[in-house]
Length: 91
Image (cartoon, rainbow, N blue to C red; front, top):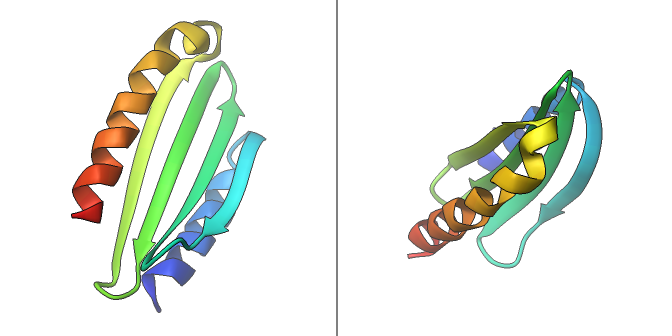
């Protein structure tokens, strides 16, 4: 199974774990496809950034969790983490 197909199944299964707030389906700008998913599960907000590279058959998961009532304050930590992850994988 290619990494992108595994990613699609992972996203589908993960979405069942809470209230889906963001679901940006796979985008394939180049050889790496990505999927963004954000859920609220009980008192936690969970953001998933998924990437799949079919050429190397590699699947990446970056998750960021925060209590719902602290999400706005903690979200400032998410962008640098994602930015670094995307930069490293694109090399």
